[in-house]
Image (cartoon, rainbow, N blue to C red; front, side):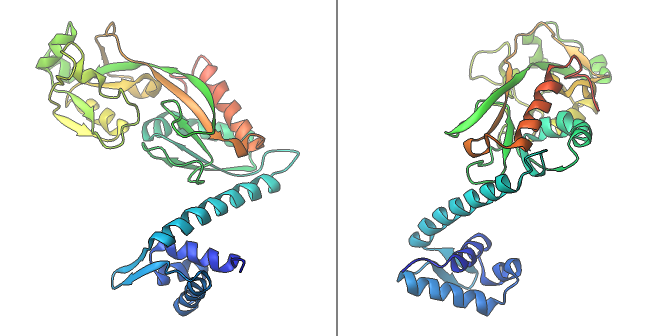
Length: 302
């Protein structure tokens, strides 16, 4: 027998929420109504979809298989609906953007006012996460990433290249001394990115600069936020390598060892094939390209 879309919608809500009660709140249905829908679906399929226990619900193997398929179908439907309702005359609707916490909070956020003034009918949702959200599953529509996309079937546009600046506060360097070569960093307090979801694979390159490969300096602080590392550097805690897209945020800090060879950061704009003809995606992409091509792409702000 054909599957009932309403029951599948209820099943998906329960699978994501982990309980009948929370799913009911999302769907504006009673717990008993949600439970009846799931029971009817299990009877129709003749397989159990959930293990029920005191702490909630866990998907069975069959439930996991069904939920993967349902999640993909609803994601495709949501994307199709957005494309169909988009105006032929001008870009409209919501665009969900994801990028790293550092780039999003320091570079992107100050420029969004300019984008919104140009395209007032586009509503932005910005998700800052140093992990790669799944664009195929509609966790976001588009992404700005500091590496080539790892997911297959994504359209990519190289936005530009960024470098690094080794920075320290004047007070810190007055006390600790100015390093003259990479080996001198052994005598300094280092601040590095914690190993939880690093936004750039080479983010902690400074730890090994001037040392044998694999022999990193011990850090005085690890933090999984580039804006947080910047604040720690400003406080006089130590030295850190920070992306030069931080621009004016680095003003007042001393640029240490400017001749030191550092890896480059390649920024990409990526989105799924289904959004190839979306006007919202096109105008946002063009805005990013224009901003990064301007002379003030690093030091300028909105």
